[in-house]
Image (cartoon, rainbow, N blue to C red):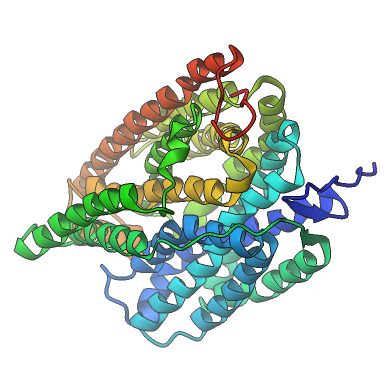
Length: 497
């Protein structure tokens, strides 16, 4: 079946075929998704190989996510200024260099620092990928495109689990980073050949004060919450926590005064934009913890190795990859509200199943829950991405895509810390950390107590997912107002929800 040529808009991205364009974007999503799961499996080896402190090794994960969170809107703005394809390709190059340096890391500071560099590349790729899709495809086909993009994430997560387990077990943890180099080079080559910037450049300025206050604020809160998983609350941690919260408040004040803020607050006046972004935040807060909570359950009370624990989650990712394009088509046909809200509701069901795992539950129940969760996530992501980009005026595609990534990642980084903190209520904090890293397992009464703690964390995630579903459902009212003739954005054509 041949694909019709793209009809490039004067303010967008051109490609010889939209199918090739989406393949390039999928590679970018795949390579960043691989690094999410593959690094989790390698944490025990990184801890031992580089002599990293137990409570510091998690910053190999958190540091990467935090950088993507801070830079998402700013590198999206760079795409509007200098070309979305150019910034997308630059992200690939930086990611490749960061990966190679991670493979050559020699101590704790170097691995965390090079992961930060990798995160800069990941931010350029992920923040601009949504804008590239919005430029390549008309509004009525974006849901399907984001659905195919979801295949890249699911396949990347699966590859991360399978390749990560094999590499860590039989080769060396350093090769989990070396493997990004050839994949990244293929992505850069295809992007240079297939994608072409044809957009008019937008004159924008970077919000350095906003980045500084939000970055330091999030770092202060995350540092305090992460340390609480291993040490009791003291004056130092209280200072980090209070200082971080004060800086986040200062960030909001600064954004209200900036001519070109890091978070464009005017976009929140778009009827469907606010609930879409908040639904993404609460979904990330509820769901990102699941990967770690389930792995902690399987490695701790059930005594599985990291690779065996992760393989049980593969069916969920594979089913999710299959469902994504169909969910995207539903979003194109009926609007994004229904599939996004149904997807979040399905994820609530998955969390309920996880919350009832016991020491004697069949491992097949973990597979069932992962499949249900994969279906729900694959319904939500393409529909919600489509909703945000439909509501966004074309000249702000880069900023809107970056804001969506920012809200999702803020949820993800705090989800990780929340999972560790809640799960460590019932046993010593240091032992909970060791279980997560994969260097300890549990037996007897400790295993039972820890499983009860995990139940509390899953129930907390259920509550957050319900909030996300309710936020998503409120878009029905916004869409109805738009259909009655009220302007959706104030800057562009009405959005149909």
